[in-house]
Length: 190
Image (tube, rainbow, N blue to C red; front, side):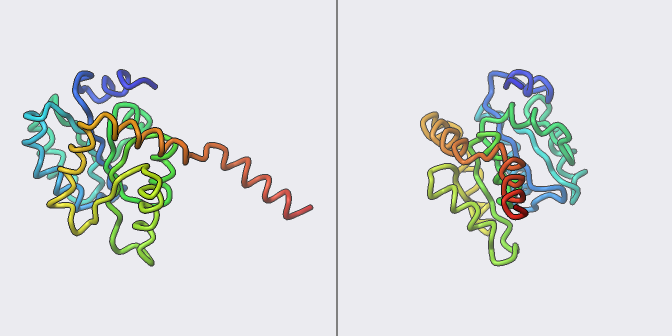
């Protein structure tokens, strides 16, 4: 899947940098509220947004996104996430284990916003493991309103940082997990 194919799928402009914001199937209120607040900033910055809102308050966010046609694609859920990853120059995401694994395989520069109520704050630790390897950035959920959009756009317009994050996060991808698990099972039964 090429970037151009992903951009075309969402009806956006191939010549604009693209943010992908995902907050899980229910939606991350902190991420969604930041996106809602900054919809008016997309056009002046010549950037666009693919926005998976999740279920909670989806109609509010989607209707607001429609007011910015040709700059925002907003939907409750993205069924063809591979196209969204292909289109994205940077991703905003929670930091659950599956989200982190997907970002590594997708090789996308990511700003993580860990869910603050996850048991033992494991999402923060997941994000920190990538940050320590210069493979992503993090904004605390409590600071999302004041720091998230600025952090994302600062990285988005820093080609060196984008490239570093993409290279470093890709190195952490495990694309053969099924083989590793099968090998471990076979070792344990022999």
